Amino acid sequence: MTWYDIAGLIGVAAILAGYAAATMGRLDPKSAASLAINFAGASLILLSLTQRFNLSAAIVEGAWALIALVGLVRIGVRRLARRAAP
Image (cartoon, rainbow, N blue to C red; front, side, top):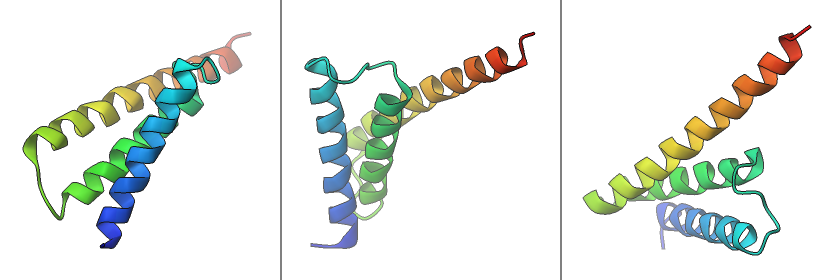
């Protein structure tokens, strides 16, 4: 097993744990924590795909990471707007 395999397995575990926590109501799926877990997990899986490329998996994980990143950016923008509001 290579470091890339380990990174991919950690990514899968992170995504599954985040999904399970959200499904059980322990984690808000729109929260920064949930989005960060999804982004990190998908990124680790994408890293593992650099060694054994699979187009369909790369598309799914790339979309997963992008969607999570957009959500994180939106949360960050809202927080900045609240701080700047008089």
